[in-house]
Amino acid sequence: MILSKSDISKLEQVSLQESLKLIEDLFPRQVVFSSSLGQEDQVITDAIFRNNIPVTVFTIDTGRLFNETYELLDKTIARYKQPVKVYFPDAADVEAFVLQKGINSFYESVDNRKECCHIRKVKPLNRALAGAKVWVTGLRSEQSANRNQMPMIEWDECRQLYKFNPLINWTYAEVLEYLTINNVPYNSLHDKGFISIGCAPCTRAIGHGEDARAGRWWWESSQKECGLHVAVSK
Image 1: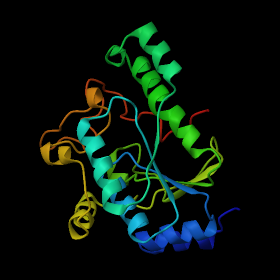
Image 2: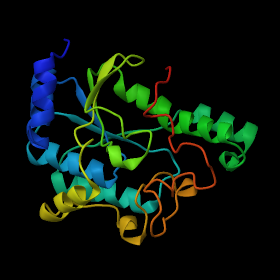
Image 3: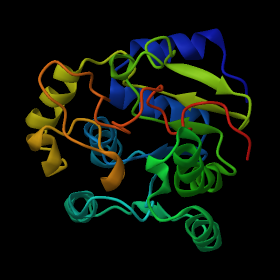
C-alpha cells in the first residue's frame, strides 16, 4: 500500500493516539515500534498499550546497557502487562569484533565505534523490521541537527518501509508533561542529567546548556548518530 497525500495529512493533524490508530488501520499488523526506553519512547509505548493499539513494541539489548535501563524494561512490562520483544546482537559478530579489536575499542576511532553500533544495534534492528511496512520511532526534531529536518512520515528506501515519527514536532517540555500527567515510568538516570541514554560506556550526563545528545559518544566531535536513523544496507 502507498500512503496518499490525504493519509499523510491526517497523520500530521491528529493526536498521538489517533495517529497510531490510523497508521495501524492503514497497515494492519504490519506496524512495529522500536523503543530504546528513552522518555520519548515511553510516551509512545504508553499511548500504544494504554489504548490497546495492536502495534508490536520491541527493544534492542546491545549487551552494554545501564542496569537502570533493564529496571525500566521490567517496570514497563509490569505496568502495562503487555510484551516488549527484545532483540540481541548476533553472538558470533560480537565475539569476532571483540577478539579482533578489543572490548572497548569504540573509544579508539569513529570507525570502530560505528562498527560496534552496527553489530549491536543496526543488524538486530534490521531483523526486527523484517516484514514490517511501518517503523514507528520516537525521534524529535529538537534532538539534533541531523533530525531537525525530518518529516513526520518518510519512505525508507533501503528497508522498503515507511518510517513514522509521530513526536517529531513535540518539544521536550511536552514529552515531560505527558510523562507526568499519565504517570509513565521512565529511566531514573534522566533525573541525574542523562537526557539521551544509550550504552553505558558511551553515555554520560550533560551539563547546563549542553546539547541533548552531547552525552552520547562524548569523546567524538562527529554527528551523534549510531546508524539506526540513516540509510544503511542490510
